[in-house]
Length: 55
Image 1 (cartoon, rainbow, N blue to C red):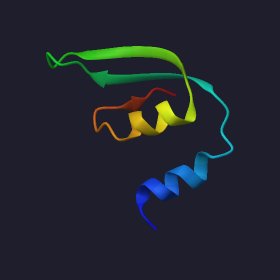
Image 2: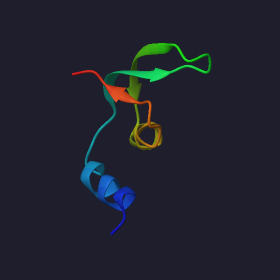
Image 3: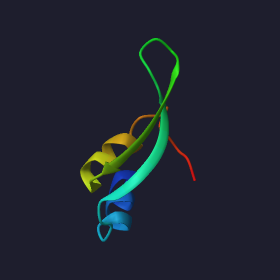
């Protein structure tokens, strides 16, 4: 089983959630976001190595 399959099976019961996170901008700076993410958007963000969830 691949990592993506593991992630998909782990969050398939997840509803849209508000997520606060950071990621690197194109200019190298760090952007902070506070958004409601669908499962699809959440999985796409997990593929970005600069994506960091703020707890």
